[in-house]
Length: 421
Image 1 (spheres, rainbow, N blue to C red):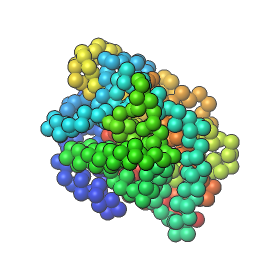
Image 2: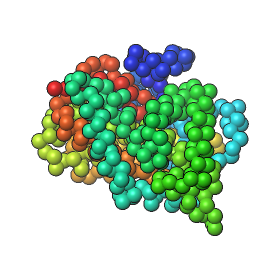
Image 3: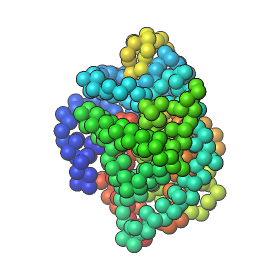
C-alpha cells in the first residue's frame, strides 16, 4: 500500500514511493484494475460502480493477478466457500517464494484470520471472550481519557494533522494497553504496521523485515509471560487451554501479531476516513452536533461508506462461480468495501446518510472470518469521533490537495491537515 501523492510530511512513504517503478496507466478497470492507482485511491467508488455494471467480478494481471468481486451477494457467497477459497494467505500480494522460505518457524502468522477450519475454529474461540463488550470495558475508559489527552496536545494550535496526530495514535495505544506491553512502543508499532501492511506491500524486503521484527518482539513477550504472568491479554492467551495443554507459543505469537497488524491500521483508517468526511461535509458535521441521537446510525453509516479492509482468499482448487473459473492458486480479493456500495442492497448507496436505518454493512467482514475485534474497533471509533466533536465541533480541511490515501489492503487517509476554531 503506497501513498501515490508525495508529501514532505511523510518522508518515509515518499522514499518508498520513489523506489517503486512507474506503473502503466489503467486501460480498463474490469480487466486491468490497479489497487495502487492514484485515481483508484482517491475514488474507488466510481471504479466499483463500473465493474459492477460491466463485469461484477473483475480481473487484473497486475501484482501476480487477482479477481475483485463488487456485488454484495457474491461476497456473501464467496465468504462461505471454505475450504475451496482458503484464508491461509489473506494479504493481497504474496511475498516472493525466497522470502517465504526464509520463514522457518512454521507458526500461523496471525491465527485465526490466517487459518482454515478446524484450526480457525479453536483459535477464534480462544480470542472471542476478550473482545466482548465486557471484555473491552477497561479499554473503553482508557480510550476516553486518551482521546482527551491527544486533543489537549494540539487544540490550542488551531490546527493539526487529524490522521497523524489523532486517528493514528489511538488504536496502537489501546492495543498496547490490552496486550500489556510498554506504551513507549507506540511509535515503533506504527512503523512496524505500516512496514507490513502499507509501505511494504510493494517492497517485499521491507515487509519481510518488519514481519520478523514483530515476530521477534512478541516471541520475547510470550516468553516473559510464561515466566512472569501479568493481568493482560498475552498472559490470558498463554494460560488458555486446548486439547489438554496450553496454547503453543507459536499460536500465541500469531494471535498477538493479529492484534497489532489487524487491529491498528484498520481502525485508525476508519477514524481518519470519518474525520475526513466530517471535515469536508459541513451539513453532516453540524447535524451530528445538533442531533446527538444520530450517533449510533452515523457510526454504522461511516463504517459502511468508508469500510477500509480488503482481505484476500486463495483458490485451493479450481472453482467455478458466477461464470468465472478461479484456477488453483488464484487470488480473490474480498472486496467488502465494494459490497457496501452495492445499490441492490443499499438505497442511494453512493450517499452518506447518517440516519440510515437499513444498514447490513459488511465492514467487519462476513462469515467465519468476521472481525473478532469488531466490538473494540467500533468502540474506539465511536469514542474517538464523539470526543473530537465534543471538543472541536467546527473544523475543515486546511489543504484538501495535501490529503493522501493509502490503498491495497487497507484504505484510509495518512495525511489529513485540518484547521479549527
